[in-house]
Length: 373
Image (cartoon, rainbow, N blue to C red; front, side):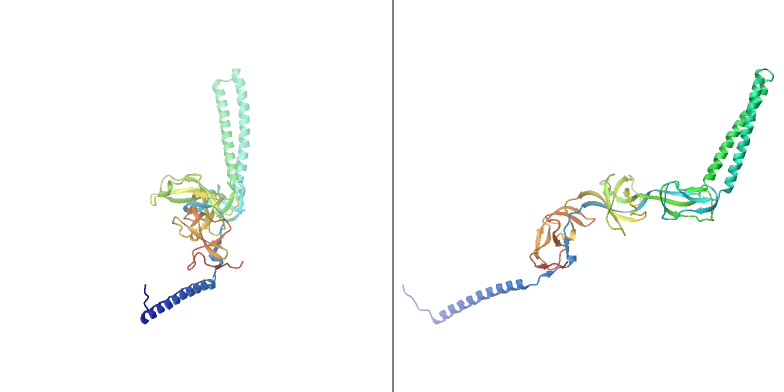
């Protein structure tokens, strides 16, 4: 085998390729080192308190939303039962009253005089009846002895029966007069809170004029209109949850009745919710917004929908903050509440810190710093 010497041009070409390869390898290594150094020197993303939430176990319910106005279950309008001048008004709006409590007095002098007159007439009628009884008894003896005719005795007995009827009528008149006298005292027909007072001392009250309005606020009822598509999902006994503007916390009620006939104009059905209000926090007329519970989960972590990424896919996840970095944590959605925009999830434990919502420009593995307590 013979070896042939390389020509000068070929030798120069091979030497150039060797130098170029060495330069390329060095460039790639330097680029990798530069990228690694850049990653190491990239500052951690500073998170604010608004970016974070600490997970917690709380109830999540699938609900049919409703809005309604709270009204007292029991209320009453108190009207005057007699005419006259109002002498005194003893209660004002907002005061609590008991059943039978005196609310106002109406001038009763004329009625009092009428009672006295009836009592005097009753005494006269009783005396006349007593005399008529004596006459009848005496005439009966004479009739039995044959001294008077039967016709004469019947006339005496008839007079006695008339006196008996007159006395009964007088007693009835006296009872009515006493009732009218008692009606000059306006009393509460039920226990509750006075929410309207429509008279003042010195005013003239007419019979059946409404003077007060009373409501029992210990039990409230709300009427909500539900669309026809949801009415088949409702039945008495289901729980309801709602909030009231101006009051902290959530309140609970119970579905007690469903109107089986839809409103002609709206094709909606009225449903009635009963709300216990023994502590008196809720007031009649307040606006309630909530939902009738269809299904509820009590032992899962409750998260806002914004905290769960790809919630509509088969692989939802949250961004977990751990060890100063963001980690992608898969979760499983147990229950969704679109009305409250929250989810019940499994896959994270209570007390862990996650991003409250997706942040622009962050990804799993990024370094982060937490706000100072």
